[in-house]
Length: 454
Image 1 (cartoon, rainbow, N blue to C red):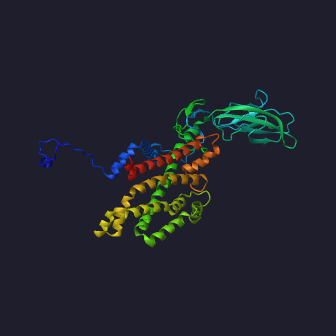
Image 2 (cartoon, one colour):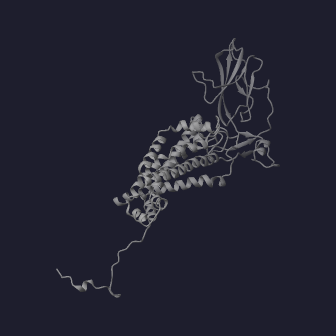
Image 3 (tube, helix red, strand yellow):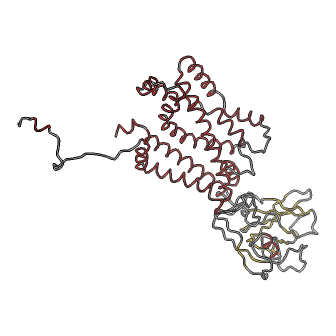
């Protein structure tokens, strides 16, 4: 073993080789960003959130369709439906055809969305007839469908259906009525395929054709395109999802920003002052936690004069801000209680720093990581709360669109037109999941204790 001499402690000269071990200097937020990028789920969620914001803000610019405009030719149509329509002559009333060939229940002409014209002979033992329409064939249970007309004599043996006809297959039934108007088991049924048609005047009125367009009966045109289909009133689903996103995200982001900001201020004051003031402030926060949210939502709607069927966006926003801040206040108070015992806080006091300076310059900035994570988790909770309240009719009311109110409308027809429920429910689920995963990633990236475990 060689001995250590004084020469070993001489400074290096310019020509001697040296070994340098160094790393780039990173700030707290730069290091957090690097850690966040390493979390693939959190990074993908961040991109989804950015995409949702672009969908909300830039979508209406790229797809400038009025979400309240109705396309009565395309009602409850799923995406990808055939949009072709045949030009027909303007509608003319019809009163049966005595020379119509054939027997039994039959069509006077092919069924169209303009009219379905039926004619028949008197059924055995009938003192009258009732006409039904159904989406399914009549089975042994004699489920005829929707009653369209009741004819109490045998002189009128025809019927013209013009009630909300859509392309597809319908099953018409004519049922014999007994002497007292009761339904008998005598009936005839007919399957009718409905073809979409329109007139030149209707096409010009709806902007499908320009004035002076020369089209003949039998020509084909294409109706307006709806990428995600239409709802039960013929409104564009994509435009309504964009409009609903503005309402849902306004409440989902605006309300958490307000009550988190108030909670940060409240918890900071309570934690820094301490003592009796801290006890009184936190007992008041415990009292607010015990208040029922739904009851106060109803109270605020009454207080602001929001009647039945009116949109309760503002009362919902106020209820969230007034009742949801205690969780943030408790969290920030705990952080402040830890930070105020640190050495640099004592050093600032010795240098003459005042309380506001200590709170807003040292303490609150050191809690921003926790506050940011809290805010990220509060946003999906607020979005889900808005969707739930709108779904049960306590929040946003039609015709104002929101994802919750659209889900409420779509659940009524989910068996026949599931796309009216699937799309708004998908956006709610995607948004809540993205914010939750992003919050989880931010917690890992900003928590120093998680960094030390690696």
